[in-house]
Amino acid sequence: MDILIMVGQLLLGLTILVGLHELGHMLTAKWFGMRVEKYAIGFPPKVFSKKIGETEYMLGAIPLGGFVKITGMVDESLDTAALQKDPEPYEFRAKPAWQRLIVMMGGIIVNVITGIVIFIALNYYYGESYLPASEVKYGVQPNEIGRDIGFQTGDKIVALNGKPLEKFDDVYSMDMLLGRDAYYTVERNGEQVNIPIPADFMDRMADNKERMFFVQPRVPFVVGEVAPNSTASEAGLQVGDYIKTVNGESTQFFSDFQAAMQKYAGKPVTIEVERNGQPVILKTTVNEDGTLGFYQKPLVEYATRDYSLGESIPLGTNQAFGVITANLKGFGKIFRGEVSASKSLSGPIGIAQIFGDTFNWYKFWSITGMLSMVLAFMNFLPIPALDGGHVVFLTYEMISGRKPSDNFLENAQKVGMVLLLGLMAFAIFNDVFKIIF
Image 1: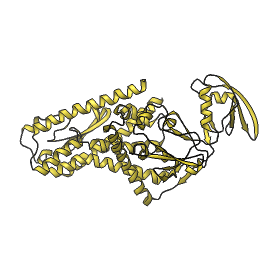
Image 2: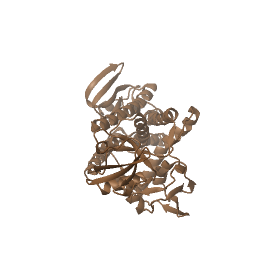
Image 3: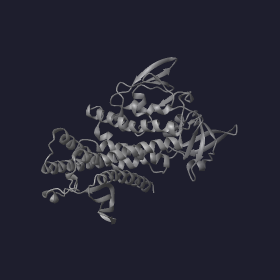
Image 4: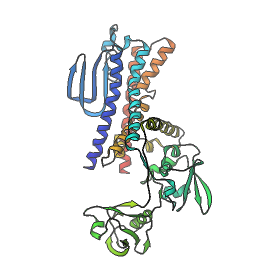
């Protein structure tokens, strides 16, 4: 069931984004009087189709893409037989270069608009809930990767790149993790210490199971929810219990409790809890994976903020374009050799894992909005067979006044298809490799 939820979210998100992307191409083509032969979501074999006017609308059985077939255009179908004749007025190749450029940009523009609208809507509808840095009174607990770069237990993060920290989640922001010469400032034993972020930090996190959470707030907690038929339930843990010790070791913070669970995984333990002001002793055996089966409730006050539509528009727009900025920074690190491509790039399996095995509308639309901007960015890359490749050729034509030959465009399309198929194969293999190893 978990896998079905992940795959279902991936397919739903891709269907929405690909459908809108191809719709952008189709609408701009029809706007300029070009004949659109087919609009397809998914690839053959055909599941459903209906012809309306000159256009066949199709749903394919392989839901990992889509396409629009515009008469007179050299595309991924490589159907060049009709190009041997003189162009008809309704063909793509018969139209001015500026019109063809807008058609090729149509899908990218729609994806950018979609991403912006999603982020605006999320801010307006849900607002923002965040952990104020002032609530992290006991500092942070670093994991192995956090300790490697210089964090110590109890460090209080007070600034990011010299700017005071207000929202604790900003510690994990892409601006920090992908920035050059970025650093954290922490308060330690009454002094301020700067902790620089290494250039290969993203690579280190890719090798760490806990990934982003290289530091976590040290906050007191109580039992928030007990899973039915779990070890916690059988042991007698109840909602609201404050777990004081495990085998005599203090577990004031959830990070302490997690460490104790890993230490005693598969072993019997004695747990002292405080319940309604009274001490209670429970005995149980920790699961092999170091869990008992309950959700914690941090004893901190989260802040909430609602945004008006006027506030949501610039905020959502900045968040949307922030995705593109993060991608540019990420590619820059790959090209400089600071980050490994194999650890940074993900295919459909990796994307499905990002969606997760539980469904939540806020998370689904957040990831879909991010993917919409990523799709726009990737399609704008100057690779033949992508929209960006067509944009390069059309820009050359508009500047030079000379159109590349149909034979050149056909061969460029073939090269681009080989590159894209190779990249897709690499991404899928890389996803499988990361799961196995």
